[in-house]
Amino acid sequence: MGSLASIILAAGQGTRMKSALPKVLHAVCGRPMVTWSVANARALGADPVALVVGHGAERVRETLGDEVLYVTQAEQLGTGHAVLQAKEALEGRADTVLVLYGDMPTLRPETLQRMVETHRTRRPAITMLTVDSQDSMGFGPVVRDGEGRVRAIVEEAAATPEILALTELNCGVYCFDAAWLWRHLPLIRPTPPKNEYYLTDVAELAVAGTQAIETVTITDVAEVQGINTRVHLARSEHILRARVAEGLMLDGVTIVDPATTYIDPAVSVGRDTVIHPNTHLLGETVIGADCAVGPNTIVRDTKIGDRCTIVASVLEGATVDDGVEIGPFAHLRPGAHLGEGVHMGNFGEVKNAYLAPGTKMGHFSYVGDAELGPDVNVGAGSITCNYDGVRKHRTEVGAGAFIGSGTLLVAPVRVGAHAKTGAGSVVTHDVPDNTLAYGVPARPKRTLQESGQGGEE
Ligand code: UD1
Ligand code: MG
Image (cartoon, rainbow, N blue to C red; front, side, top):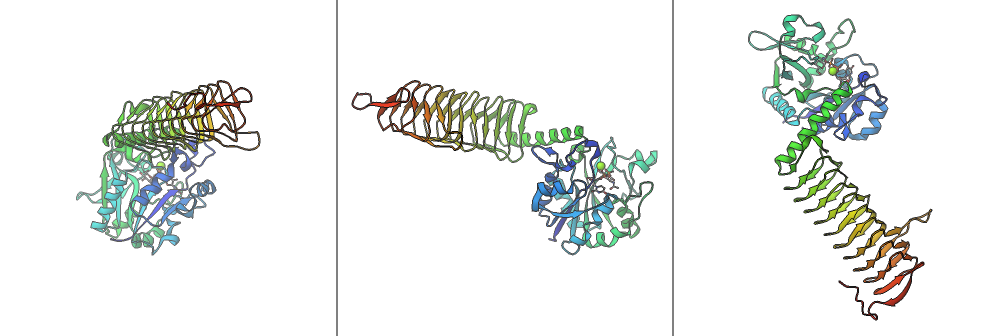
């Protein structure tokens, strides 16, 4: 097995996007477009991965950081010129060079794997990806001789009607024998009228030197959807989303309506979970088995256990253990952690707080910067007043406590185990265990054990 390097071309301006953002940074399925190509190169074990940048180079660098090796193409003089810019950085570092585009995120890693394997088995100068398509898509037709050998790649603009009738098209993705490429690429001459250096001209150099050109041909044009406009952007988004959804369905997840379900590629979902329409599962979300999620739910970077039900809610940066019910209209914010069997009903918000197993907050409550013990009952409209305008303070509620409707817990404050607060009480001081406190401000009135109210249910 030889070593593989990759060059991703991403220096073009992307004028037709009509955007202040460099084209390759526009998001597809929740990630910058170019990162799909980077991930493809990495999946094949390519190292280094060189990214040819030009327009918007600074922003591309800021976004990708040191994930890739940057090669600058100051002037966009064509695809051949772009690849040549990587010569210095890559020569001698790998025996095979894979060239990809930063604006073709739908290419399947399996297809590239096939290309690399073909290249390694047959050892030609070039292995190129072609697509069989009646629609030319602006791609250059591939001309073969009587024996089926590739003779040339003709740019669509320069093609005769006879050549335009050919249905095998160059996708612009190649594996090169590195030593051969670095020797021949500098020989390319600019093509008028734009005087661009066409990478496709290396095919002629190979033919002239009787070097072999192998091809891998695909029929699914969706794989080579390039992005030049926002119409293409939406098309690529659709293709990738459908692929993510299909992968999950084949793994045992029910997606009631894939057309209105938006799942990012890194999301994982367990078996027999049902995803209802208009649900967005984003970022690094992990969902367990036997859950029902949606309709109308957004989940971002959240871990959800098994057997949970989540309806019409927004969850961000949260952790939800097994058997939890959420919604409708609940909001979990970063650091929210709902323990096993927690019930969180309508219009609740939890932020940076742990609700231990069996705790219930059914209606109109806010719990922030808090720790609630097991089996606490949070009455309707109760609020942790965690912010004094300057700093955040913590609230603690002990096991089995009963927070009466409309209680304001003015943090820092602790409500003891099996304590109760009366409806509408404003709790400014700690309430001991097994004690009832009520009023404004709330005062402990009696211990529940003395009065015979056990507090345990
Ligand atoms: C290229 C191929 C064509 C193929 C098609 C498939 C050439 C001459 N033609 O044409 O045969 O069918 O791709 O998509 O190679 N880029 C740079 N620097 C440059 C020029 C381009 O980085 O100086 C980048 C662009 O940002 C883009 C990619 O290379 O990501 C392709 O360039 P583009 O001008 O779109 O080439 P095509 O005309 O599509
Ligand atoms: Mg193009």
